[in-house]
Length: 141
Image (cartoon, rainbow, N blue to C red):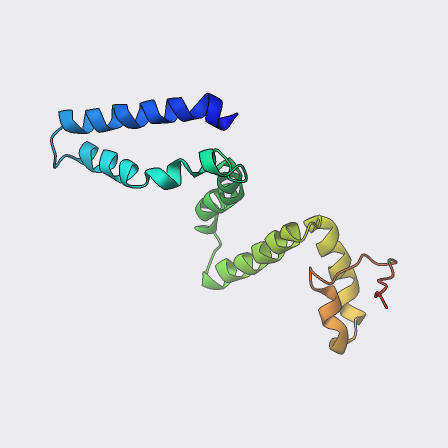
């Protein structure tokens, strides 16, 4: 489908961009932008050759959006120590998400259990090892 529907449009866009490059001043910022895009053409069109490659990077941008929004909020952490505490909390939350956990459920359970959890078994509470209270983790023989 990509070959049928998109290849011709992509080729036409490249031709257009190359023609525009001949019409604008060589040292202009616009010419630099055109040359930049054209020099990375193989990366830009990789999705045409490999069906595993997404046509856009929306998923990556959505994943980074909280960082951009948070950056503004972090200015008001109160102090360097407050900013470091916030960074630790966000690291725990994002790692929980990456491990397919609901961060609120994870944090509530861990905070409820950690005060009487044995020190030599704290690794059980890490995001990648954690099981909710009452769930028994069985190991394969």
